[in-house]
Length: 475
Image (cartoon, rainbow, N blue to C red):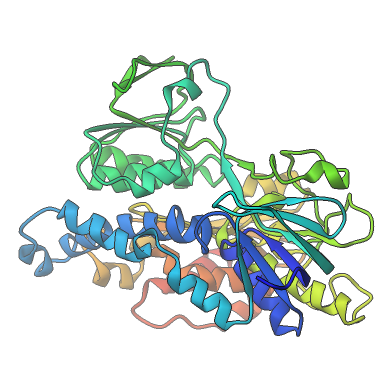
């Protein structure tokens, strides 16, 4: 690498960093993208893609078994080796040659190594082979896209027990015989579903009184009932007080609902910013902290306006799709400012100030799936909105009867009564995630209910629930 000065330097080559670098290059700027592991990052190799690959086979088998005629053709259980092999193919066998080629073809300079800030617009890179450090300078901006790491709670003995986190949970080479999962959020529920499908005996522990505690309560109830029916030991309102492990043997968790012993323990209790060894102290920031940003993803606490942060690291919305959304906004903002354009920090996008605050879509790929966007009823009320909720049983639409025998599910709208627009949507049902984007468009676009009534759902599809919801509202 001959060049040492670039218009933009991006720290972290995951999905967010890749998109941000591509965006600024498209605006005519040069970009260096620095990554210490695999280009493509957590989502491509240890999170979104492998976890959904593990889940897909079980979901397809359940779908076939729910339709007479297809059910009779299904004569066996999942082929675990084939499922894991497909997961390996989806992750390119944890090899990033194709990702690097894409980046280079897009005009991005890929730099291998661990990066640290060393004052304003200055980045030091330590190559993987331990050779001499390189110093890079940014003309316009440095963007931090380093993501997050699993949060290990301060439970006595937990860290010493060497638990798995999401990385190990999605890349394991065989199904554990017994598995305990600490945390009943989306990651914990998906891993419980995946490894239970593949034959592990799973215990899922959640401190709250229902799974998926950040969502509408009914969502967690549906998922808990389904997991229990599949043989998962789901324990809510369960607090782990200590963890012990003897060498490489099983791990024992002491809880207020009794002891749990498992060959493998997975921790899925949240995330912490990957900023501890990033040189933040050289620009006046606290190492290990989340980076607070404005609506253009510019870090607010650093003078000069040259430092940006997109994705998990700014703690706005810890989802790959929202990180990529921020990357597009951030890349456009950097490009605009580099070219002396746009006085307003949100002029390049009318929804830049709102989408990662109030219109975050989320799918939990359990069976049944959970799809949500916007506010829950509780959060909307806490924000002082005057709301009305409408709910409907998904199994009552004709499309559900055609799709599968015994189709069950539920959907809920949260309506802002002053503006007569939808501010929240949650649905539970088979493959419901594929129907989420209609709700996202309605929420982001602030489509008035009396206008939405004219968006006629095709018959007979499950999407007919939209008509039934609006009828229940009174339209």
